[in-house]
Image 1 (cartoon, rainbow, N blue to C red):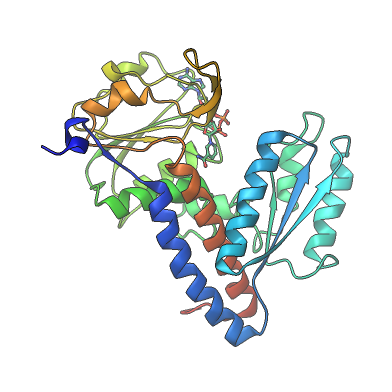
Image 2: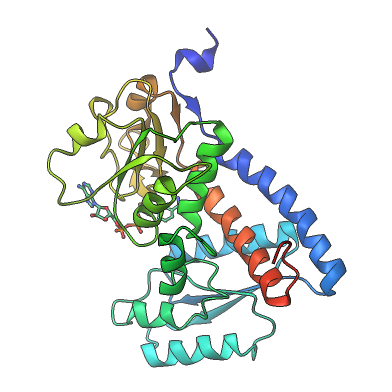
Length: 306
Ligand code: NAD
């Protein structure tokens, strides 16, 4: 038995997969540039000065640069009103700030801002986060256009690892519009990475452990460190940890990122497990780049098969 096997579940290495996706996207971007004589371009609206949001945006920009996608961040004061944000997004869409194939608004927004109104202002054909109701509707009808990036990343991770989903019981803990709900639709949809029987658990679910113990594939997308303990996992299950939580390590006293899964305790029981960091996070960014390229291709009519 190798060292890795003796620890239990094999690692779902999101960082390595994202690097492979980036390499193929970079080649596709160059083809786009040859045909269209410009680069795809992503515009990010960043409101306020939340450190985590700024760091996510920075990593999105760095990844965009690696694959040859141009990007611009429009920084807005935290005191901005909903109406002004909506106006800004309309101006971005009218390309007053340069080409805007993909437009995204970094969440969360300040409490006083009507998040729904702001997200709805992003034109659905530039909505690379997949949060517009038109894109949510297309996904629910099984004809996805822009799929929310984290959900798409989790499905891609399962497909890449060869983890069978057809006929399997997938339990997703967390029902948000940006992760849990779209992932439930993806895993239940027909075809590769789908055809699963899906349970969507949430804060009002009773006896969460009983539900999660019946999962062949368990996805945690809650935002609570240590929520998924070893006794909640069926032996041999594939465990995907979407959660990102900053904690202070009780031993070292240093701040670090952890997921929702008690990684060290769960790993011996799992067949596969994704780490935090280095799991779903890098794939979320890779899927954003893929969506941005698709948006650019769709707009210019150069999408293969369109
Ligand atoms: P959210 O707060 O919108 O939703 C959390 C969900 O968890 C809710 O549906 C709620 O019902 C459920 N929940 C809360 N407490 C629960 C409990 N005790 N038992 C069962 N369910 C419970 O969060 P979100 O935006 O979906 O994000 C979830 C987590 O995923 C966060 O940690 C976030 O930082 C992380 N996240 C990671 C990525 C990534 O790229 N890896 C992307 C998005 C979000």
